[in-house]
Length: 369
Ligand code: KG4
Ligand code: ZN
Image (tube, rainbow, N blue to C red; front, top):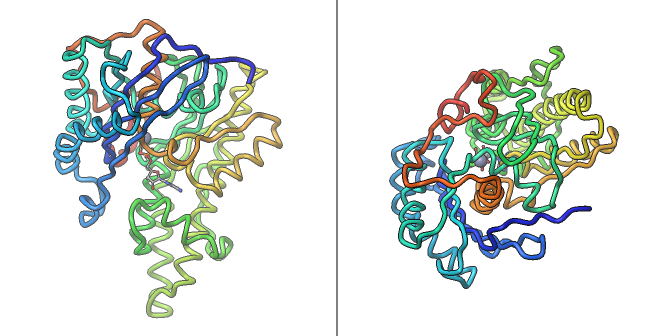
């Protein structure tokens, strides 16, 4: 890459607690290079397992109980202390409000106690800016943000300017992975277990719908997929009196292929659309939890090779929720002049592109941002 990212804060603490991961990270910037000195993520999978989804009250309590220790551990891992930090960044939304409150209160306390500047970060901006943390990608670029609560194509102009090109009108793809895994009796989160189950599966066995492909826009829909799978499962159960291991693998592979086809086709349209305005658009990236999926990554890479655009996806541990992305976004926002005071308020809804009307649906984070 031809440019080096220079941030005025040299060492940044990030805190994230907007869904079901409590995370803290320390990121340093030196000579235009970023380095993740620590990134601690404690998930709540076992707490929510028996309820079949994230229970907001349980999540909030767990964040409040764990956030201090997670921050302490991020310092221990980085071999640093609060005195070494120049800036504190914290997710201030969108998300499950109780969890966001826990993170914001912790960050305010630390900022007050140490007299450090505080920056409230939009969780989605954290995902959207990850390609700049890991690869110094230059603005503007286009992302597909695909996670458990969101699915949007976003043109990223700078750290606080985003235009939505399209998105899901109902479920998010990560949510579809999670629900389908539940139907198949696979463990949560569904994305990794479906990906694993699909490895030796036949992706052509079940022809699941590819919704909205006939519409010439960048919007997507994933809720019908779950119904189609549930129907096929019932049919097979009636026919053969249960599911065999190879059936589960075939279901997983066929489902993953349907999701991937929709994401690839709509990504193609989004790239074409954005190129009408920015003819030299250089980079397309997938970010968010679903970006961890190898099949989807490799299919998007082929698409981008064909369209002659640079493709990037974060390393796996920075696809799913983490606090390094929050630290980085805080650093960029601070340089744009953002500094929050102790009135910083957590927001459950906080769209990246506030000018566009909200999209429908509600994911595991509640109403879609
Ligand atoms: O970004 P993230 O950690 O949290 C949200 O902001 O929602 O994304 C979590 C979502 C989950 O729904 C999970 O099933 C999905 O990302 N996910 C995956 C994979 N790893 C995580 N989906 C598909 N393939 C994966 N390997
Ligand atoms: Zn996320």
